[in-house]
Image: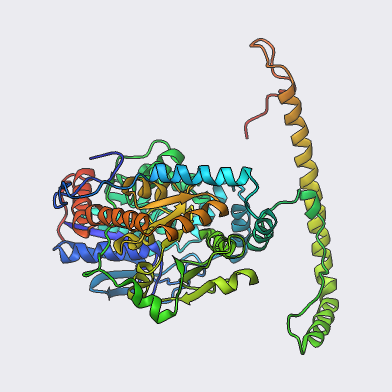
Length: 399
Length: 153
């Protein structure tokens, strides 16, 4: 199978769920014997979209990459105004929606490359749904375009141009059933799709939960968080619940917070939050293993690798009741609880902290779910079937 | 392919006799929520602390009506957390504020005008919607009160 993935940024050090997912998928498909190329821009920063890398061919973790320069310089003033309106929950006119998209790394040469590549591959696979490379790129050859949206309920999913791109594609590849439900609710008339999921590497051997606790000096009930420490991910609610558990319930609960960027918190929270900053995967999984629960109260998730990683080491999760995706993961697996506010979050933490047997049962159920549903082999099998079903043998022009 | 859950891969181990059923998380969450509701009703939670924490952790949450924040002030209280050189820093800020006032004050004034205009329109719209909601439902041969056909743009 010949595949071209199209993603706005793809380089070592570029962090983000979509980039991670596409990197994993592309690399593993390549090692399965498929012919895989990644088409992307020269940008690294998704705020400035400056051309930071040279155009042309590159190799990232063994994956052939072709980069094209961003040709629409970001209009900072316009984007600031549009973003303010969007963040305030206002809708913006369709023309401005198009402008917003054009300001997310639009590359005219990338569109030319998509046109050139379309007849030489079995599928063009675009991800994620909201950037110019997908919204404008999937318009070039919709008959060959599959979009992996990685979508959640946010303003961009309501943009007319975004919805048109999704409707126009030959097919959609969903990473979770929750994602698909959200998309079908927001966007009527979607093309056929297939649930592909994503893979998680299980640790080769069970992790000793005491290793990282001892090394980091974590004591008592520890809950952990990994990801961007910002309001958009509901991190303040996690810290608020931990602070309330200590100050209001009189229980010793520590939040081990991992992720990029500073964890900006009110003074009340600081004694109860261990800011571990960016850590490598081994440390993250070790902290997860030593935690009562991994807490992810974000309501904007299309999959949540963090939830799967927690389950991979047998730790239950606490998620937000308003996040359809993570809630559905918990319902399907039995590996976590869902809460909506501080009191519920505190009670959930204390319930799991005070009942090791319940914690173990939930964690084991989560791990079984990952073992069965989230293996890379199963994910790649589903991906191959999805491409074959959504774009049945159209004949590939050989170069 | 299942529409609700990921299909089980062929390689997945069959559900064996020894495997425990997954915990009934719906029931666990149901009990948890019932307990929270009961404690809330009994006033068992530290309401004052929770309110204070909520304000501290979500400072930008719009709890006030927009009328309260319609006036944009160009001058804010000046302070410094630095114990030793704090007064010097505050003095420096005061000088900067004075030097930039000619530029900042008109912008704040324009913003206040805009806020007031928007708020007036919003309140007028609210009144109009309320009137519609209070009026009896229109009959098929009687158009809605206040209905005016508008040209499509």
